Every structure is written in C-alpha cells, then in structure tokens.
Length: 190
Image 1 (cartoon, rainbow, N blue to C red):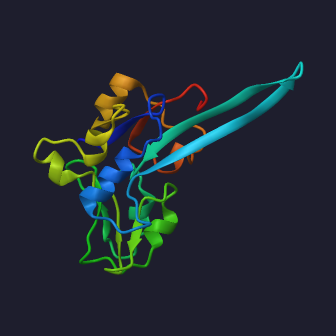
Image 2 (image 1 turned 90 degrees about the vertical axis):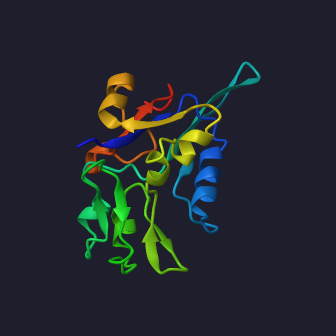
C-alpha cells in the first residue's frame, strides 16, 4: 500500500493563505469551514540594551490540513465506521451514507481536521483532492502555493527526499497519530 502524504516547508511558507483560499474555492466551503489552515507560531520579545531595543522575535507559519495519519484517531473513534482509511493510498475519507454528525472524529483529532457542516448535518474534511490526483493534477493547496512550500506524494518518497521531521513547536506530538507529513522545519521551529 502506498501512503500519500504532504511535505510542508515552513522555512518557505510566508503565511499568505493562498492554500486555504484554493481549498475553500475548490470545495465550495462555507464561512468558518477550512479544510486547510495556516498556523502562525511566534515567540520571543524585544530586549533593551544600551538604550536601544533589539528584536528577539521568531515567527514561522505551518500549513496543515488532514494529515491522513497512519493511526488516525478520527477513524478509531468513529462509532459508525463513516470515517475510514482507503487501503490503496491511505487517504482518510468520510462516508456520508454512514455519518451521523456526532462529531466524535472532530473531538478526537489532535489537528482539528474534521469539520462539521451545519447544512448537511455531517462531518467533512480534506479528501486529498483525490479527484484531481486521479487526473494527474496537484491537490488545490499544493498547486496554489506561490512559494512552493507544499508538495505531495508517497510519504516514503517524501521522507527519503526531505527527512522524517514531523514534530515541531506548536503541533501535537506525532506519536499520537503518526501523521503522514514531513516538515522542512524553520530554524525556530525545532
């Protein structure tokens, strides 16, 4: 089985949110529903030295959607089996025929990936743009990034190319779900 995953280079991410907008547009999402989100992590302060202020502030951005985890808590805790992981590529999907909108998947995902859709009364989430991938196109978020800070592919190939960092400041510990992501970590993120 191939496990699809994302490479997220937060050294290059400027926080522009083009990936968020592209995802919202492609999926026709309502206000307050975002399958992909850009998080800002900031730490530090200004230091007064010799009657001057010296900045000691570090900021970086991380673009996240569903991480299509190896051990997804959303799948593990779904009482109906609506939340499931495809065998052929490891993509985590929601079967709306089975979903009862109980939100257990949302409460159990440490990344906040599943989103409740008030209109249909069911859970929704990133589906890795499998319709685009099947046409040999990039997922909307990947194709829209002006800095090329996002990439997708087999997680094994991404790890061979970029390493295996998936723990950085500001994110839940990867041991919880084993997310299918590799992060090009900003120097302040480690």
